[in-house]
Structures are given as C-alpha cells and as structure tokens.
Length: 193
Figure 1 (cartoon, rainbow, N blue to C red):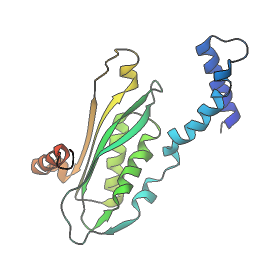
Figure 2 (tube, helix red, strand yellow; figure 1 turned 135 degrees about the vertical axis):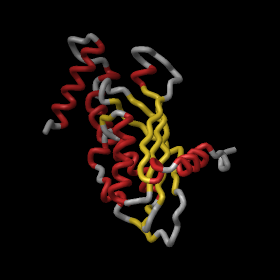
Figure 3 (cartoon, one colour; figure 1 turned 135 degrees about the horizontal axis):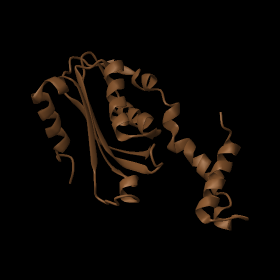
Figure 4 (tube, rainbow, N blue to C red; figure 1 turned 90 degrees about the vertical axis):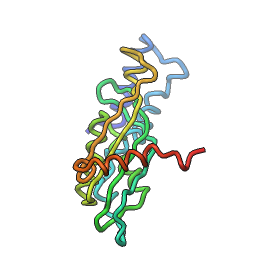
C-alpha cells in the first residue's frame, strides 16, 4: 500500500509539473500536496463504506407496499477517466415486501458508491444492485442526473449538459405503470416553493 508521504510526493510532482517549477514551491503551494492527500480521505471515503452494513438496519414494513422514494439527493463524485469532478442529484426508490430502511441509509448508500473513482453508470448500477441484494424489494429504481467536469472544463466544454442514467429492477422494469408512477413522483413539486 502507498504511504501518505508517497502520495504527497506524487502530488508534489504534479504541482511542480503544472507550475513548471524546478525549485522551491511558492508559499501558497508549499503545503498543497499534504492538503490534497488529506482531502482525499473524505473525497474517496466510499472505499471504506460497507453497503451491507448500511442497509442492514431495517424495520418491519407493517404492510406498506407503495413506492418509497428519496429524490433530489445531491452527490459529488470523481470521474475515473480524467480525475475531474461530476455532481448532481440522484433519485432512489424501492417497493418493500417486508422490510423498509431508514431514509438516511439511502443517502449513505449513494455516498458509498459516489465517493470513489467512478463513472456514473457504475454508481447507478451499484446502488440498484445493493438495494436488490440486501433489501430484496418488489422492485427498485435509481436515476442519476449529473454534470461532468470533463465535459465542462475540457474537451467539448459544454457547460449545461446533463447526463442521465437509470437502473430499473423488478416491478419498475417489468411494469410500465410502476415506472410511470415513479416518474410522476420524481417530477412532483408539491414540497417546493
């Protein structure tokens, strides 16, 4: 495993490359390598997350068999191709059979997947896989909308492009009515202004 000092040295090399610096780093950059490495502990904390433990604490659904939806969950991730940020919002839904999970667990599940070097498709699929595996719902759905730094800051430089990915499982995949009801709930603005 790479040590913190080795990681900081690698960042130091990148900073020197970017600055075109052969000697001492200027004052504002002097501690940047260690600050970057320390920030990575939070930015990439998803590697230490455990989906099973996150979804392990469930409650009796008490006969509830409707859609459970947590929508507009903001997230931030890092593209594995260019190490550029991407961020947006996720909508996570499931229909319980016997067990429900606390809503904060859905947001934590998103963070476990997003706070890694990622692509949006893998985040979407990973959340759906975990819901299906650990909650065993009648169906689950994950829809993610995000803007990508690699599209905004480099290459084609499209500032307003939004990428949408989805994973539909069980009843959300099999029944158009379930998908339609879910989309109406996601588009609902009853709680907003």
